[in-house]
Image (cartoon, rainbow over all chains, first blue to last red; front, side, top):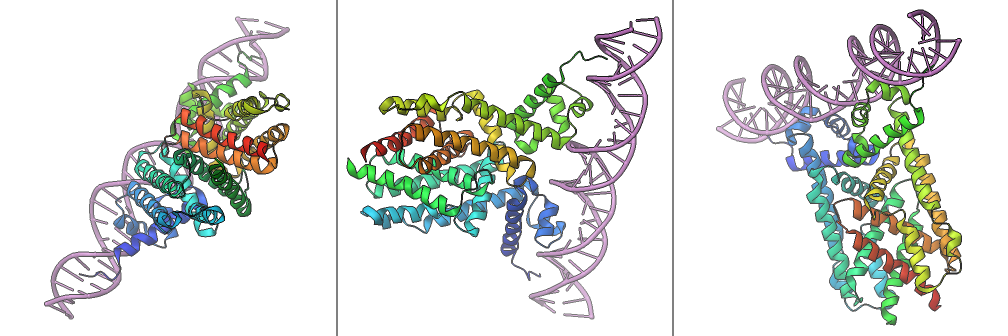
Length: 201
Length: 201
DNA sequence: GGCTATTTATCACAGGCGTGATAAATTGTC
DNA sequence: GACAATTTATCACGCCTGTGATAAATAGCC
């Protein structure tokens, strides 16, 4: 019984091809035939690893969610506990930048996530992953603010998560043409006022 | 030479039908046949008023941009000049809420604009309108902050426009499920710190 | 009433899509 | 080398799409 190729690896390659297509043409530009061509496989091969279109979409969304979860896990909240001043600001900024399009890799992931979130509005397939990502991000930001001793961390977290969405939107789409430097500066300004405001009271 | 129906009005009705479809199914759910059905017309009739698919999309985008422009024009920046304290905060909040999904009508328009902005990333048709809307909004916010005497209005405007995008995203899509009350509170908290921070220095 | 331009309604075509079904090739094991 | 399971490659079908072309109906004007 031949198994010269690792199925999981194959699925991974296909999903990566799907990501590239989403970045290039948007989530509605995905089709089994295009994904097959992009991944260098035959349509029949793609369909052998994914039950169909819906299944491929779900797998791609799952992978996007996992990647975001891994990014968030890379900055354990415990490392923030007790930090103050510039150290606190730097640590918080680094945490948030983990999920912001500050380099090519994160830019691609941000595009996929953004397309996914918007698509979840009308396509039930994406809803669970979309909601899970939002919950994960919200919890991490909330825990981070709590670890830093910020007053009213819920309100602060709401501001930060909203800012993350807006900054991603402005950076990734051409309508705002926000540069990475501007993104970083705007985020830092916001986080700075949020932390300093808390210290004063 | 008969003209029992006003062509402009007809186009308007068709565009409104297109808006309803975008809200219901997303911008890629648009098709000439669906728009015709939604507007109660025949495909041939729709095609008589719009050269084709692309033309319909462009007209819908144009209308969306015009509506946003009209909303922004409803709150002349001159009215903000010299305001301080709670009055300044209220006025600024009212201005920004003009383009936020705080009621059904603005929610629908926000969805259309959001779909349009994201679609502009891969579809050149939407680019000019998308960029125009961003420029208009940015200018209005910038002027408003300048009229209120905020220090570094550029930075503040960048934060506010980003927040607008993020709040819209969180409210309109199911991933964050931000309620209108939360949206208002988050916006107010941000605007409050932005104004108060300026006063202290 | 008849003329004419506008508006509406169809038909047909090519292209892309997801999908079911099935044949062919490949490769490790015996 | 032969067997068998996995993997790959095609074919065909129905559906939906945009679009060009064209016929039919409508309604104002003389």
